[in-house]
Amino acid sequence: MQKVSTVRPPGKKPLAMNSPPALRQIKNLPGPRAWPLVGNALQVKVSRIHRDMEQWCLRYGPLFRVYLGRNPLLVVAHHATVSALLRDRPDGFRRPSVTAFISSEIGGLSNIFMAEGAEWRNQRRMVMAAFAPRAIKEYFPVLVKVGLRLRKRWSDAAAQHASIDLSADLKRYTVDVIAGLAFGQDVNTLESGDNVIQQHLDRILPGISRRSLSAVPYWRYFRLPQDRRLEQSSAALRQAVYSLIEQARQRMQHNPNAGDRPAHLLEALIAAADQPGSAIDNDTVAGNVSTMLLAGEDTTANSIAWLLYFLRSHPEALRRATQEVQALAPDCAAFTLAQLDSLDFLGACIEEAMRLKPVAPYLPLEALADTTVEDVHVPAGTIVWCVLRHDSMDEKNFTNAATFDPGRWLVPRDAAEHATSTSSGISRGIAMPFGAGPRTCPGRYLALLEIKIAVAMVLGHFEIESVGTDSGLPPEEVMGFVMSPGGLKMRLKALIRIEQA
Ligand code: HEM
Image (tube, rainbow, N blue to C red):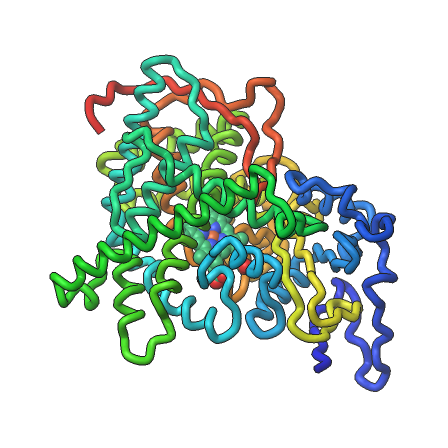
């Protein structure tokens, strides 16, 4: 089937209907010189593949080809094209089938992230209900409780003048939040010192990502220690989640009305699975609970880490955000949703940090049928690599694009939404840190709340003495499944004495 996309490069006129466009072939596009068999695979490094692609964009333009193996990939960077592709799901494009295959190879179960077509629609409906703002609001007291534990942990570190491993502590925070939301368990990795669950989580998505990008599937012939660890972690997570399902089922049997007012995502999924005619089985329930842990841990933790780094290195923004928090939401123990909603400048800081350091700086898609992207013929099965940061760093869209300038987001929303470019130098809809279209991140509202709670807690109770790396250099962008700031440490000084969290 031939399907013609309506997306054209900016500034190009529609092609006349009676003169069929001369489509370009991917292999004829500009791109880095490729070697036989391996293509450009040896020129990219998985941990910095996002940078390699972005640099090639600057050299070859926003539409070019790369070979990661024998078949060419189409790389696209115009935000309008990227947005149209992301919106053309699940019918026109899917997440790459290789990723779903590799996930199932290590025993990954069906879940919203990997599912496609009708199966995805069914799971998405179910998951969205659990993530609706109303459901998250009910969970707000638990979010604050976990925020207070983070405050306690960091006030202990401040008292000992100890440096905080930002990524590790923030992952404890996000795992504790999601474990509560997803299966009602107070795993309390912040206080227990036990971070076994995190160790498993930390291996799974980066492992799937590494294998998905590997030119040769060597693990099918021999396994390296990292492959054995990946498989063990996947099995351990699966087993832990099955046992949680069993416990939840027993609780629900003792409380027959639990399905009407599910206490957490797991109960909601079990209730949905138990409906006559539901296409949801126990494996799908387990797959989705695991996915929440995986999708919500690193993404949110690293977004917070990048934001703290930017605030510490921009004193004026830090001063303004601190003033705002101390005036409107000074005490983490007394946080309300209304208080957090009122932190407009902090909200702008979050948007700006995500524009400069989106933890998902690219999204790969796979064409489900022969199609056309801009003026390029794209055969079914082609991987289309969407670069999300290129246009966010373009002066045409953001004045002084490389600068952390949260104030640019403070234009009145209605004014900015109708204009692509505003006097304060931003264009909305260009940065897409949560993706776009029907598969946009369902955890967005939860994540933004988690970020606000953690950062407002810091600004309300501590002075940030330093956030940086041991070398004193800016943190490297390290790509695992998401883009994290390499080796970031923080030192805090308590503003007030915190007796008990
Ligand atoms: C700052 C934090 C986060 C960022 C930046 C982020 C970003 C993203 C992005 C870019 C996608 C892909 C969207 C697309 O394909 O268009 C995504 C998908 C997803 N995210 Fe998030 N995410 C965050 C937090 C969370 C949280 C807290 C959860 C849940 C607990 C979550 C669950 C998911 C799920 C389940 C999907 C797959 C949706 C689907 O395929 O239908 N995310 N996220």
